Picture (spheres, one colour):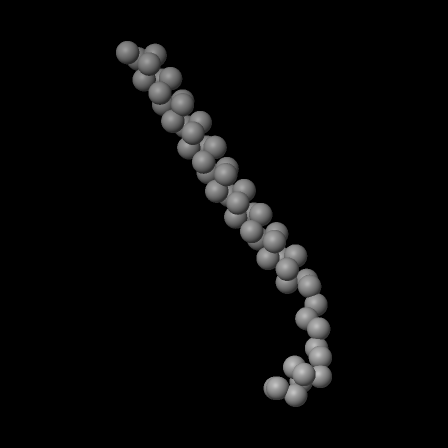
Length: 52
């Protein structure tokens, strides 16, 4: 019983670790996308200036 409990605990920790790695990986990917999108310059045209 003791070895089964240890195996279940290790499996749970492994799944938890992989889940956390996935969540933080997705957050980092979204952060990188936002940083890259923020670097795209906005074109100013005469139409936009006349509306403002």
